Image 1 (cartoon, rainbow, N blue to C red):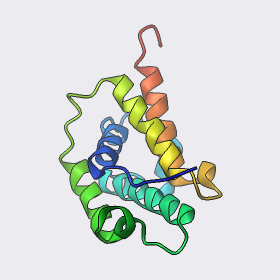
Image 2 (image 1 turned 90 degrees about the horizontal axis):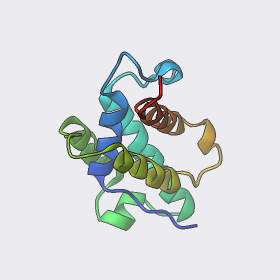
Image 3 (image 1 turned 90 degrees about the vertical axis):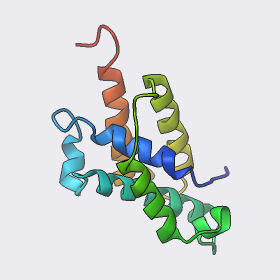
Image 4 (image 1 turned 120 degrees about the vertical axis):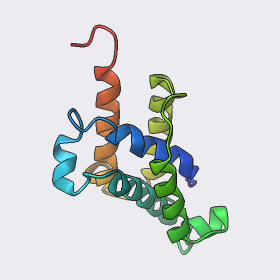
Amino acid sequence: MSAYLMNPSEIGTLAAYATQDKSTQFGACYNKGLDELSDVAECLALANIESVEDRYKGTEGAEKFMGISNAEFISQCLHSAIGANLTPYNPGQIARLAATYDYQASEPDGWYDSRAFKVLTVIRERLVRGLPGYD
């Protein structure tokens, strides 16, 4: 399996989608300190970096793939999340971003117990709740 860092705007979009409606989101994720947009964006960015570094041992993920530091990558994800415009995205596009992110962040052992995976679970559950006929 290969791994790469996703575009910071994609991670920002996922973070914004996950946190856009505080009345219906997160549940167990709130108990993990993920109650703000910046927390979610940082969590997703770090998990993507961790996956790349796990796959390509001895590298700093963002340096290898983007020519920037990991801190700069995280900062770009945070800025993208704050400025994210979800209007052009339909549910299928969000689902595809979530699936791509899942693949790119799943290298480390313990992925399915991670905070980032819980965010993806919230995103997927929100997508399902938005389907026609789902009540």
